[in-house]
Length: 103
Image (cartoon, rainbow, N blue to C red; front, top):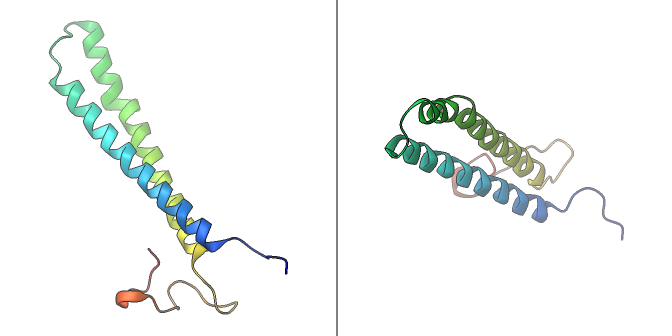
């Protein structure tokens, strides 16, 4: 028999990987921000420029990428959600533990 559609198990695994990557990126951004703020080895215009670049565009871009990974993971989870009929959606299909959204 030919498979039509996506392998929902693989989509769910990929969604989890996206979520894990987003969490790792968020944690890395927090660690880098802390390290940059704590460093006292650099003084002067170059050190100031580094801190400004981090607190402005660099940290913002890392946060945006993490947010995009989270969003993509949510979309993958929704697409991996088993559908028993053409109109079933995650919000209309019962979930475990009383939740109505996929994890």
